[in-house]
Image 1 (cartoon, rainbow, N blue to C red):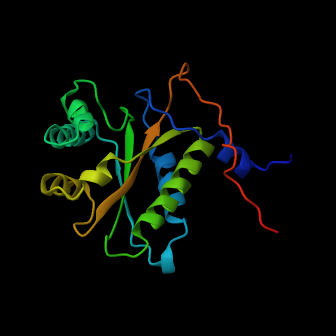
Image 2: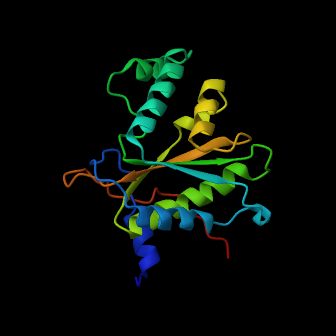
Length: 189
């Protein structure tokens, strides 16, 4: 099968859940964010916003705030994570891109998902690893979390729809082989 570079990048991308401390360069981060902005979006409204956080202190504060919300949860799984000394929702990646949108926008979630996918593929094409992060979406409406997210740069009228952890995997990081699940594709001719 003849594959171009885009198809090779799509097939090479994997979710990475362990990162080195090496930071994503400003130039590469700008390219990744720009790729997100080129994603398709409903009616071309572009109501999304990308908040890139590379500051270690801010990332740790975000993690601690999330853990405090988890500790107060009714879900035993999240309570356990909230009480863990080692839990880090963004896997200690040096960069976290928070993708938010206006919740009143009909296609907010879909638009953000397309933007994130463009970012993941752009990152992979630059040799940067990534992982989709969901946790902030579930708690971004909490008043304390919302206040901190807006302090970081998220527009006040937004909520989080997903995040991208970005960085570099250690050389010994395990990579799962991707296999298509049987029965996931149907072609009608």
